Length: 472
Image (cartoon, rainbow, N blue to C red; front, top):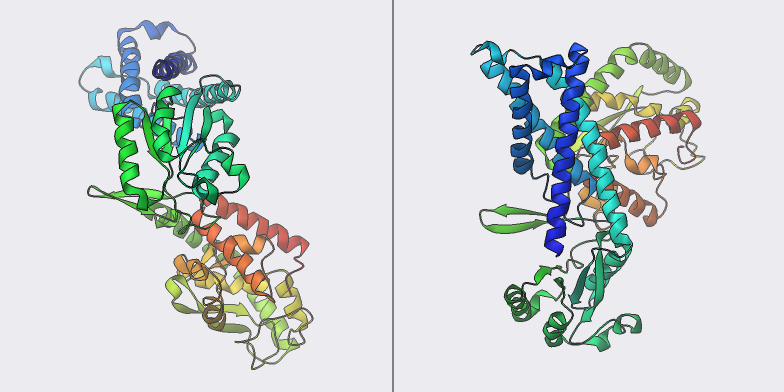
């Protein structure tokens, strides 16, 4: 019954997509010729049929119908982009390849362009709207799947909470099965319905749809026995691995890659491991730094340099060795904001610090003291956005006492970062302050996107204009 419902959902999706595609084709013809008469010409009728055939092929190839109850909207959008990219390539190839073969193939590219632009937005609205309706339907108790969890450990308890929270997934949790219920608190024990050996009979009697196994790896024989039982009785068995010893609370997903036939689990998602993402980030860094160096430096640097020289003795720029990507040291450049002193490389600036010059207070408050670092960005030593580089002394100290501190060095340091726009900037008086900064930096590394970089830059500019209480 549930398989038929799933097939029905797929059929509804496909019919809706085709209806939108054909409607968009009519719109494309109308906007290209301002009438519909040419639609009935042989070559446009052929194209019409071909577009429908292309859709069926592209939909199957792109995996757009690989829908699951827990599929995320981002995954749906990604599949939709693949679907349309493939359709566009195949349909335009149809025209380009055969345009000189016969007059029949001399078709308007504008028709295809309008067709696919209209179809993409309408299909996206249709797909997301349909999924939302299905989830509302399931959240009200319809089309649910009965599930049980074998094992009642921490991971199993978290998984149960997720099932109960995400009611739109349509899973009805019936209970735990565990051999040592006395190990758990009362609020967990009341959901334990029996031992692991009792799970099989319960699954058969209550017609369980899916069995989630959250047993520890040491229970290998019991896990294999459950998998065999599921195969023999047409019950889907899914493994919920216990990674609590390896993951921290802020890591929300893992990735599995296959090295040959061997699955390998990656415990940290790093978007900047992708060469395309690194290219995008580096290209933006070059363009952004060139704009700043070209349009700001020629007048701003001489002005600030003159004020610095007039108000205190010493160089215009302050150069300091700091920790960079892969913990390789580099020379970071800043405007000098302090009177020349011997503690600059070991002691952070603090509120009311007597070492800070009058112009230095303004530069630090507005972040303008960091402006020369666009040279570091242009040279590839830094990025516009990333974890702030620390003094070598701080790297040595905090790496020994703060978990995940060195993870910050997996990417290039930045002029500004997610930690800074969320209040973690300036002096770190307590270890907790640095821990908060590290958490924010690691989150940035795991969740990087070009849009996030733009957001951080905008937030930085806003903070510069209104002033940051932690900047001194």
